[in-house]
Image (cartoon, rainbow, N blue to C red; front, side, top):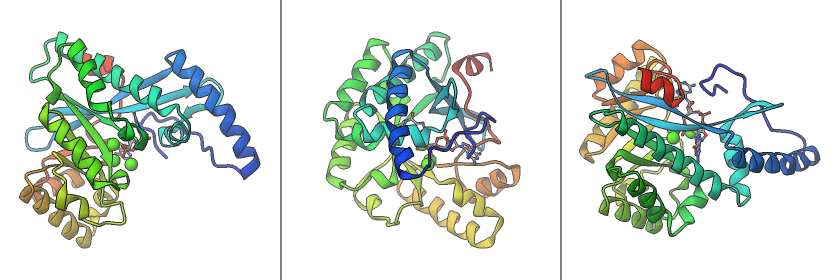
Length: 271
Ligand code: C2E
Ligand code: CA
Ligand code: CA
Ligand code: CA
């Protein structure tokens, strides 16, 4: 699996016993990494296709383990989810993202790009989540509409809870994106009741654009997003051909290696 760094990522899949042991060790290593601030947040650009302008970034966490090398975030986030570590890890990522927004603002970036942060299930259980994010933003004098929260489709189980989160975010101008759209046991159900600001079309649909069926399906998603007055971001865009088809279909935003890989803030500031 690519982590956008070109380095191979480590797979933690192992037989049960070894796995349980390894998990405990990895957990304490993750805790130490957090304390030593070894988790790095990278930014992957999101382009407005028609203008070529970078509208914002998605924050993607990286853990460069001293011996194991790059540990895939999908795996260590899941590990953190299974323990109580996800709350401090999640909060650390949120703070780093607010620091980055603050730095972009300080350097006079206008319009200020948004940064989208991935949330995990346990963070959604936290009743103080929105207040805590607001506190981070206020401390740095940042407009709340520059922060987007990404919630993956598989986390939208309890509609009432997500509806409450959306309402509280919208009340303060914060945006929420439905991530990995199309990968769930779909189910357009969430869209019947929940007003997301953005839909992120999973990369598997972009891959399918080389077939007529894929073009047909993505075309329908574009029309649906438009009818719902929802921004659409296509993920995993790797080729010019894919971007061109997305443009013709009327998809507004593209994210993927074609536009740029996840990079440290320094690279963004130099660009
Ligand atoms: P995601 O939210 O769907 O993130 C998109 C993934 O696609 C990222 O993988 C990104 O590096 C990768 N990607 C971007 N462009 C391309 C492309 O053109 N082609 C291909 N093949 N892949 C591309 P990454 O960084 O390994 O993250 C994997 C997952 O881990 C994320 O999926 C997200 O669910 C989770 N994750 C990453 N960072 C965080 C975080 O800070 N917090 C939480 N809760 N989860 C995170
Ligand atoms: Ca995401
Ligand atoms: Ca995604
Ligand atoms: Ca994903």
